[in-house]
Image (cartoon, rainbow, N blue to C red; front, side, top):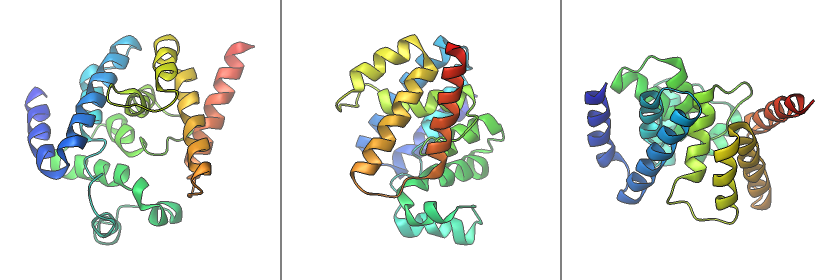
Length: 194
């Protein structure tokens, strides 16, 4: 598996910008830390985090080519809000180029842009790691990092809330999976409180 990590890192340097590569390494560090903290396999977290933005620097045309020619399934919102497509395309590439077959790793890569209801622990970790990696600097990130130390689900719920508020503020399309993820997690957190 460590050979796979090295192969991914080497290929990654050629498909994303240097700035995004640094971000990716930050996500890897955060994901591995969270994986150890919350009882998930750190190697799975490392692989998913390395590949999460593999297709992020692809053009809209390149992303849509994967939908049309490679038959990557994408709903209407993803087709229109193409910046969300890179997770699906990266998961496809993980399967086809790197022979990753673990559905948990593939789901973590695919769903890091939108979340979804019933997220696995690894999906939650990669989604949150993308928000709190050391290179992130936005209002509320320090509070989110502190919350991640205390409770993964509460931190993820806050990250989803932040995403929804941000997307609404810039008047872009909001993928329903983000709402489903938020509502599902809110129910879990609320039930835990009872």
